[in-house]
Length: 448
Image 1: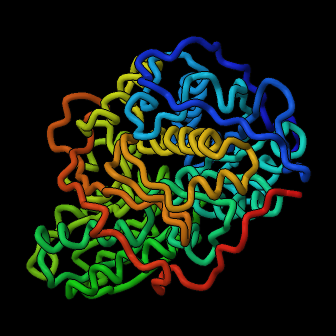
Image 2 (image 1 turned 60 degrees about the horizontal axis):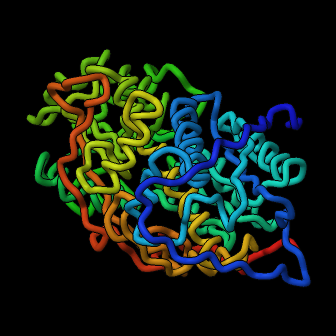
């Protein structure tokens, strides 16, 4: 990908952050003798925002860009400060990062791993990005995380739900705030048991790449532990737009639950096809046929319209949460854009603040100093309750939401309702859990 696909964005206006509370003094450290990749030497620092601006996950990408712009505005002292006011750390002062004004460049991952690596590489080599973040595909996240490890910059993952991102493909330079497939299974299983019982036959349609594979494995394991039988597992191409040929065989399979391990536009289309085939009206094995969408988002619900009503799934965060941090973020985002943020927006906003905060606490942009500041870091005030960035795998552990499509929405944004807030303890697993085995975190690379 040429540099023409990486867009430089202007520096957002700085000012005084309102209501930030008392900030801790910034500690500036002298540059080490051995420089690190893209050490900032001027008055600004550049971050690379790499998101799907085209492809099946483009809606998520658009909302990610909105949140990134908002985060930069807040870091540079503009707006109302958002979750900088509620964040348990008070290191951020609204004067950029370590006194340097935050600039950013953007790239289009196209929801393709090769394109995502190319745009990230361009941001690092041509634009001097000291951190890369973004993505709405685990395939993209894993590819870019590997590139950042090689290049010696930090990767703050955006939407990536595959177990592999912080499992067999984890890297010392990579960090994930978003939850994963195992966590979805752990949160959903008790709710599905209460709703649909323990005697069910499930049919899986699964996006054919790393996220789909580990989501399918996680949900199948969690439901089989309840007593459910897995009838079939069928893989579907990420580029598919019509799932009719995959839905038709479900009708004669003996399944009474369809699990759609699809996300974004894939889920919108597959759910629409399933409803068109009349699956939701069918009685199979004496039971009402049900559909489950393990990974849900408001943007997907909007795309699927009426078809989402009553359908359950899990999500990382939702704008209706009433904690002070969530309300602060919804207010900031809504004021700027006129509508509430998605979980995609929330995730990348948090990742940007967490990176900036780690740099402030470490007193350096050196990726190894930032990694050390993030490993084992416990924080609160970013919308999911108390959270731990676990040192062993760089995975965040926090509360997970189970949601369902709302029967009587009051607006085009009021489409999901939270039915359960699953505590972090219920979705926490050992770092050497078999679903996450096979890889080594390795050591931080500063690019020296």
